[in-house]
Image (cartoon, rainbow, N blue to C red; front, top):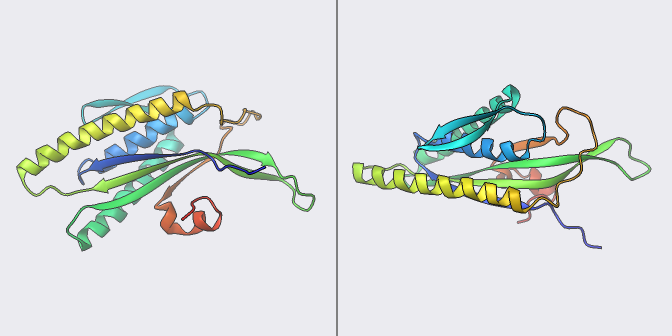
Length: 193
């Protein structure tokens, strides 16, 4: 029997440097809002005149804020060395804890059951006309991305493992910046090249 990898969902956003942090945070919060299986109090966040859900969890909010800032800083550094638009990625992975089945290994292992990859394109408009055009493109793309997340989480639920623990968060998660360039994902077979 051939083992399939976890479903990977690719999302794309286009942004300018001023809105990048809020857009990345908004999309990450939207993903977690639908995949964070603990009791949460919903909050909402306005991004480019679009209301997005937000998870009211201090630890998660801090992680999302730091990872979004790390990605933007990395993209911004690259943007300063080039004059064209620049891309970066941020990946969110959800895991389930399973007992290891090999006799020589004890304990739990984490197995990825879902992955979201956000491709971020950062562009710097140079004129007012370009700013207006970029703003409109950002609004359209953000709305399409939010709707795509909702559609995917409502459609694809059969791969979500059962909750078998009473831990506060039954499914550990990771957020990684530019995971394919990192090398760890490639070595572990998570990201095939």
